[in-house]
Image 1 (cartoon, helix red, strand yellow):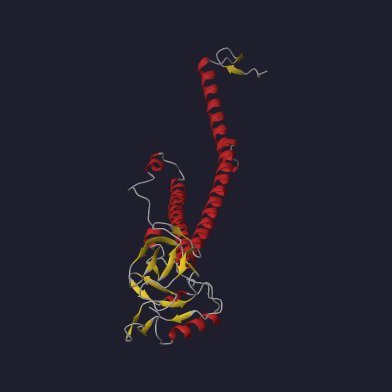
Image 2 (image 1 turned 120 degrees about the horizontal axis):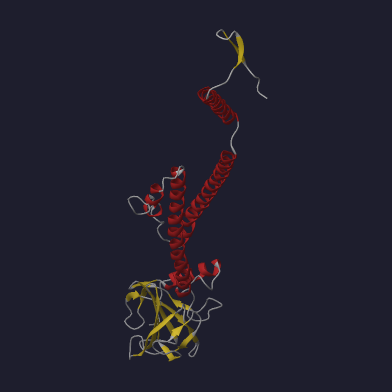
Length: 325
């Protein structure tokens, strides 16, 4: 209960009971409310100066989580960039050297992404961490671009590997007849005495002397382009196009085992040794033509010979004697 107040009235010489007016009540109430409001504001300011509200606590926690995942993604992008750099190094300095092709140009590997402002949509959203997001997007886009270039490069290397396998299978790398004892090479490549004209003349192949009917084999994979018989010269002969600039010719044959347009593999029989055309005895005259130029066939006899046997063949082929055709 509120205390009853009295005041002394000199007119009546008595203590009269004090009665508050509505105005006094309103002023007191207003003062109380003002002081209360000020105290409340001070309390709230003081409280939030030292303590975070639940919403702020939630946002701070969310920011910490976002920062953690951003740093994690940054680290992962860095690792992927390092792995990609290793792959690029191996591609340029190993695979492409093996397959004898140029490395991928640096400006192609580092090519940028098109567009004057690729991240305009992000900028227009007004995100607080806009720069962090754009930076990560930019790194990911660059990584995707480089991965695409590397993927294309590996497709090219794969194609080169397949062609390389085909290339090695196509090289005329064996002797055209079975020559286990290395004693059938009768005349080598170079200047030799012509058996009929008896003058020194360029011998554009090698002669293997063997009994009539001895099998003759394709020395590399290819397609038969010529199966022909002429009087004089090569007599009965076969030509095989091996691709990659290689053509082989087998002359003075007795008969044929292939037809024009037929595909052959290294070691397939294509005919037999004969004595047709301008020949002085049963033998096969064998030629290798590389890019339109006659080359020494002995230089390609590496598939079926040991190093010692190859040296022996080279010595036999270097002797300047009389050719058989």
